[in-house]
Length: 283
Image (tube, rainbow, N blue to C red; front, side, top):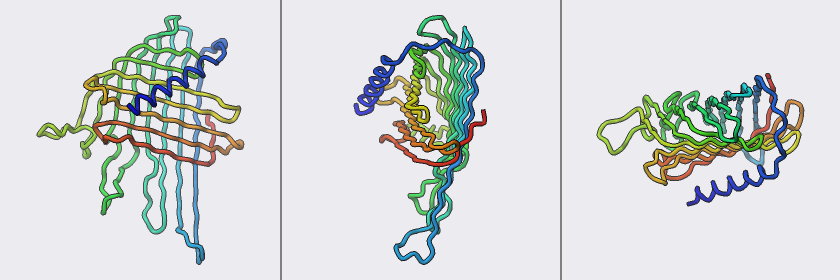
């Protein structure tokens, strides 16, 4: 019920903003290209400091791109997100703090109405091995394409106003693993260990972009997937980013990501990050 209430409030907020939005301007057909990279770095060092403290070092690199071919009869949108970072406190070794690879391609055929058919494919994984540092010694729990998530879907999409897109359709979701099938792909109710899981179900994806000012942008992406077995088995991925440009090459980003998958954990997973660093637009 908590997640249902959260989603209702989200769509209500989007509806209010969409209702107040102005009519869409005349479209500009052709390729629209965007690629932005950023690097963030933080460091502290102490030497005979009477008030105490520990040396620390943290860095993070991000690369985001979006290539959109918008034509009168179709729209082909391709986007990607690459993030990686590490942190070190005191005498501890460097530990991974951010690690994400996400690719998405959506082809929409325009029928000349608000609702249009689409085909979509997404892929998600990480760069390097991940560890559970709560255990002593730390235990490896994930790696590149271990797990790897791939989703293909087809259905109907709508874009009532510029900056708001929603699509709903039938989906096929594959989860691939090698050395870490649990808890990502293995079914604990069977005697064998499955390294691959294939689910057929329904998918809903909502993309929202709101330019708060000339230098501040809020983006939100809500992804829902259900294998239709039970109402409480809805996978939720909700990624929110508030980005503010404070100088020509200096950006402040606040990211909150909510993740829920009952097969992995019965509790919701939440990650937030505040970063300040250099950013550069390649395209």
